[in-house]
Length: 292
Length: 272
View 1 (cartoon, rainbow over the protein chains, first blue to last red):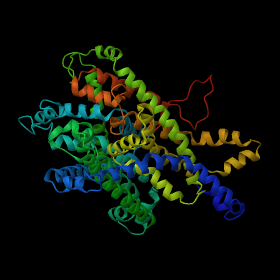
View 2: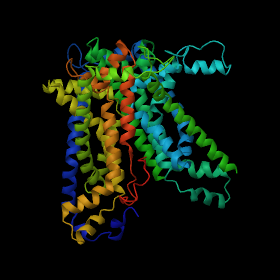
View 3: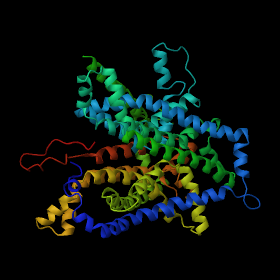
View 4: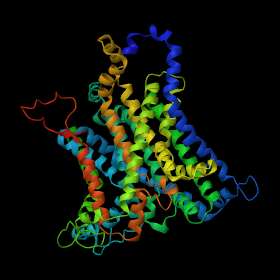
């Protein structure tokens, strides 16, 4: 249904129009291509070039200062840790939640969707601050735990990894649920019934028919949440402060405080490598999961 | 029976996730009603004094205006540029359409902070020193992926033969666009514009490097305020923004016939 015009007229007048079509297409794509080249590709290439700048000409000094130093490796490790744990946690919550959203109808569905979209309207800064209030020694979470007798004394959560991970999951969860939901909503429920007719148990039907169909959404969600959380700046700054230095906080410090652009550029280039790895591998995985 | 309970379980997970996501927003709304000058949950009574204080947050108004201007302009630029590219990609009207589509969405996965420092050094190298154009151009890169993604999806579901049909029925080219394509794509435009606007408004990591002492955007001002003197006025401001977002996403259903004035309006529903 989506491509009626193309399937009805496979090779007729379109063929003659190929040349003007191609040039019209290029003209339409030109502004976007210019934006991408001059505000994205060239600045990033420039950043790469700056990261190799040393006292005298080309140098790997800035990279050595990060990769050859235990503090520098801690920065990378902390960034990757934040990204991986946030991605894992949001996937565990988000995957069933996306199905729960797809199964809901009417007012309940609107309510769920609102809970996913509305937080985007509040600044990350204010949300992170509000989250730290919830986790305070006499905050709502601790009071609830004590009321339920799960703990006798308040647990220190603020400025710990508990607050960092829960806050990060809180902020990035919509970016996991929405791409998975977009795919789940398109799955024809008849497929699971067909699998059942062909003798599959509900578990088999789910694992062998439904799960593979959701993979493009999972790849998109994982790539998005990982790349957002691995480079998050506001979240670790407000929820852990100096106790959890990451590449992102090191970049900000290098540019805003210590005026060390070579070091900041090198840390930035490492984050770009991580980002490029995510873009390329998610593209590959996305192609494979939607093609196979 | 069994599949019904699995469904219920997944809905319960979603309900839990919804509660988890809304919790900080409830805290923000509650703090905004606090009578005490500390950014904390209210104890003993509620007060609206911080909503009054919002109006007198002198330093916030220039920041809010600046952020709104930038968000409106960069969203408009992204919508135009992204729609054009979306048409070229959805119609496969050019070589390398898939590569363009992939690169258009890739800034989403690039760290904002890195884009910020890359643009800072790039603008300095070019000799650009004015803050305003820098602050305007930077969010275009951030908002374009949202627009491109939504518009490619919307346009690939749009049947371009409808334009030919409209012209057969007597529309000229521009009115066929205006009367057929624009209404059909209105939901995609709305989603793209909303995402792009919000992404630009809350863009801290890119713009932190491009601001100077005189022009600070709203998120930068907010972080500064929270670190220096967190009082509930910032919660009041956020609550007002949340209410405005809720109000703007509450509208009449689009695909039902327009209500006649005599029978009254149709029931309103959420856009999502």
